[in-house]
Image: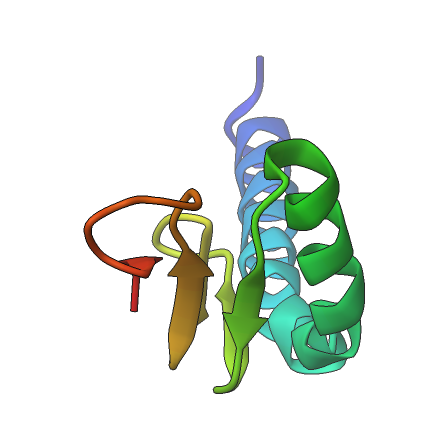
Length: 88
């Protein structure tokens, strides 16, 4: 393979990787995770039978590792448990 062809492949590959990084950094800015609070609460109730309260904001990140962060969260314990909240 000629050096110029190899350089073109490296440049195109680098551009694709760079574009992918930019997309992964920017994507969470366009997704309003807070709009899904009601759905998250409903799905937790359906799966566990317990109440979940999300009073704070929810944020998303894709880099350096995918993460969702929620503040002011309460997850109620099973009836009759020592503490009323499992998390909170």
